[in-house]
Structure formats: structure tokens, C-alpha cells
Image (cartoon, rainbow, N blue to C red; front, top):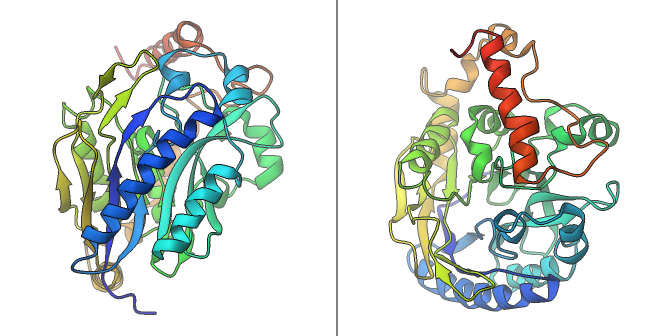
Length: 350
């Protein structure tokens, strides 16, 4: 099936920190106005068919910033998927005729008193066609569960194949996947998507100092180039905390990168609500994947060799199988410091 070129939009919203689920309405109002404007202006050349909301756009980062108790946040702020908030986004998908890629801290019926960081896709009919559970929350700040933290139970529910960790939705605008924020700091997550056929990956948001140092941009371009896929990486504009203070701790650098690692859409500044756009040309991507002799790298993976790198585990699985996630200080004591010592004990680091 040939997919004509279209425009993808990455929203760059101002985020208001929530204290409970009702506060999400404030962010939804802002996001709707921004979406309406971005779809109108972004579609002047090619029609907008994909809109990406950055991580934190609905709920902010209350749990990370304030080191909240995990169960308390689950009861007061985490949402259901589907639920009232995703249904509102579904109305926008239908109204504007777009796919929406978004994120939320969300509940899971198999894990009472717990929540995950979930990237999801809504199609123009209003259906949720993809759920991805974040595999690598940002240490030590983020309190969300990873499937790896409850690995045995996750395997019982979803199996142990790539689809359990790197699902991809085959849609009318291409194959969509998620490697949000810190996930793309690890090349394996992008490769997992690529081996599932992903053509357009959602990668957002990333904070300072990782933006100012250039890490965000380097990772976005490398993950796109290595895997011949588009990477959507809009960063939020600014953050309003419960104290009323407004600050930009993201640093801008919102980009859309194409399958050759080229930045095809860019907005450097943060601080003010805006959006970034770029043309998505899947015909060119698919042609390079299927005709190149060299740069369609994935076809040449020597998997038997690479598998030897992972014969010994590094980060502990099932870390939160029987307890809630650690707070910031506990995480450093029980995870960060022991992991550094593990690398030293194995002679990997001095």
C-alpha cells in the first residue's frame, strides 16, 4: 500500500502540574487549542495525519518532582486506559482526522496500587490501537513501574516475545511505535521497535541538562539513522508547578528526524507553547529499507554474537514484584550504588 506524504505535528505545550485527576482538564483545554492551531497551520502543504503530545502533557511530573508515595499517586492521579481522558483525545482524533500519539501514568488491573508510564496511539476512529509500557523509567526520579520490575508476572500475562515489550501498530499512516524519553537512551529499545517493523517512533520528553548537552539531539538522530525510522521528539515548552512558578526545565530542541538521521523539523526554543512539523515520506523510507545494499543496517545484524553480551543480567529483574517502587534516596541506596559496584566487580569499570 502506497502512503502519500503527510505532515506530522509535535505539540510543544505548557504543562500545569496536577494534584489529582480533575486537574488534567486544565491541560486538556490547553492541548485542544494548541492541536486545533497546529493542525490548521501545519497542514498548509500536506494534510496533518499524525499529532504527538509530549510525555507529561496530561499530568505533568508531580510524582517525580515531589518524590510522591507510589500508591498515593496511583489512587489520586493515575488514569485508566481507556478512560475519560483518552476518550477526550479520541474526540480530537475523530474531529481532526488524525492519529494521536500520547502518554499517561496509567493503572493496570493486574497490579493493584501500582501504575505504569504508558505510551499509546489513538486512530481517527477514536480507538486505542497501541499501548506501550515504558521499559526504562528515568532513574532515580521516576516512580513508574517497568514491565521488567514485575517481569515474572508480566511474562505470565503477555509472554516473553518482543511484542510484550516493543509493540508496533500497523496503521493507515505507517507502523507506529513508542520509545519515550529515557527509553531512547538505550539503543536496544529502538532496535526492538525496528525488529518489529516500526517506521515512526514517538520519543518525548527529555529534561535538562540532557538537552543542553546535546544528548537528546544526538540520540534522536542516531536512533533514527541506525534503524531507518522517523523519530518524533517534541519537548514541552514550560512547566507551572503547584507553587505557581513557571519554569522551562526541558530546554527546547524539539525535533522530527527522518530515516536518514536528518533533522527535517526543528524548533530550538522552549518556554512558549508552539509546535514542530515535518513531512513524513514513507515511500522513501520503505524504498531505502528494501533496496539499499548497506544502510538498511538491520538486515545484517549478527545476532548470535550480540546475544553473548546479555548472557549475564545487569539491572535486577522483578525489583518491585513484592514492594512499591523506592523513593529517590532509597533508589540510590538500593539500586544506583549497588549497580555501580556490580560494574566494578565485573571489571567493566575501574
